[in-house]
Image (cartoon, rainbow, N blue to C red; front, side):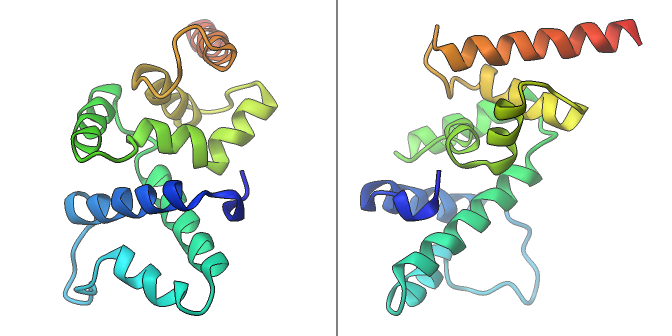
Length: 152
């Protein structure tokens, strides 16, 4: 999904998601800015909403990549925290906005453990409606990868 197609409502919820991710999970260094990601994005919005949306998309992809090897249990715990804050869960963000996820689904084949854990986290995290075609495709891909690993 192109970032310019984000509705204002989605964009606003994703800024809440990003601020919470920054507060809870981003490593902090002496050089880490004091402002939140949404405050930074608001400065960009003043001149270009499209550029702010691109920046948001890059930050979301970074977080998705950082969490690629997290266990389903860790994803479920993060999802609960984000849901309690009234924003998207990590599983939803992975499914909706992750370039890697969209590439794997389009390809129809899991090529690595990292890809496996990304899809497993989405499937286990409840980011997909039960019985949805996409969910069935993911289950088939996970089973195929598991069978390949057992055979090797």
